[in-house]
Image 1 (cartoon, rainbow, N blue to C red):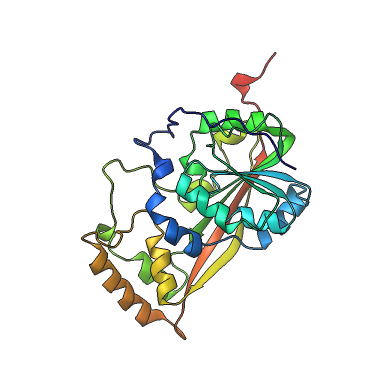
Image 2 (cartoon, helix red, strand yellow; image 1 turned 180 degrees about the vertical axis):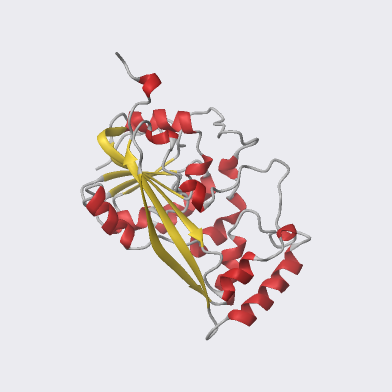
Length: 283
């Protein structure tokens, strides 16, 4: 199945209270993001099969699809996926990763202006990206492209901070080594905030929330790449890059087992149908 998408809008989409354009925030991180950011556990598909009637014919719009990490499990399950991504470098990385999937379609669009036709998808997903969206505009767009009584699924991988000595040591790295841009976007949501039941995207009905286990195992090169995939980490050539890498090497050597360290995550899954807000209901 292939849909006809609209020409990408020329407007400069603004996301919430962010100054500047957050869609370009990860352009310099693509080489690290694609291979080193965590994917999503197999249990995600099992959960959605039970809870939202996910099946191979389902047509999915993966919003803010980035390098395609969340698209992968749906494509493996046999779904058709439209990866909607506004950042050209991230979108091209996703196209390379998913080039062998005939049912993946790359779309130059944003949450607030996907360019997809009306009522064309049966599931909307967003992995690690929803906190960048303008809630009101993306909600309007989701209601436009989603078929009636279908679901939206928001997913985040939250790094555990206090479950192992390594995770505690990593979480204690000095904050001053991080890069703080002049116009700092609002940060990714905390696990506690993201898990709150009330949520404006879903209107008058509380979405469901589930937690799944996830993990990554890294050698030194992988660990270094994982850290550099974060938008706040100083890149090679930045003043704080050298001191931070030295500290990371020391941390790795102190905690590695058989040349590997393990990142543990809680994968938060929020899902529900979209309903009209009280103020939007017609009489």
